[in-house]
Amino acid sequence: MFSFKDPKPESRLPVVTPQQRSVELPFDATAPDIGLPFAAATLAPVPFSLHFLVRYTLAEYTGFMWQHAGYLTRRRRVGRINSTYLRIKSTFTAALHFILLRRGSRTYEMTIDAHGIVRVSDRGVTLIAWDDVRLIRRYRHGFLMILKRGTLPIPYRCLNQDDITAMRGFATTLKTLNA
Image (cartoon, rainbow, N blue to C red):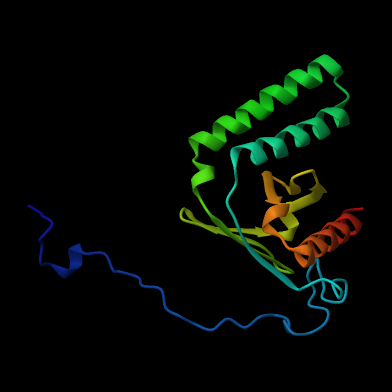
């Protein structure tokens, strides 16, 4: 009978351990045109990389969702009563998810550069490529990145004036690429 302490080597599966190796990039990252959606030449007046910390509040998060729901309902022309109902429903759902997922208690470390967006929290690392970003909209509380699956709010209070200029540059470049 087999047990967990079986000394036979044929009963054990081989263990594969990851090995470190150097990765050769197919492009020169210091070159002015690196072949990515945001080439360094198009972002000349904008800092190449943004790095900041975000801790959302419920009021600001629901403000983002309220304004974005208004944008979506205006685009679909559903009428004033239905529009208000849909805005209330989606904002309430977003607020409920905010509370249940404890987004207010997490601090997110974000890095935005020509390669994409990296979001680090206590739950792990999220990598978002620029191919997944459809649009960057400006709202009263900050920028809202509209992704293929979901949204990513970036409040103004987490950005300095240079970062805001950089985000406007990213939004303009993304808009011209998607046009």
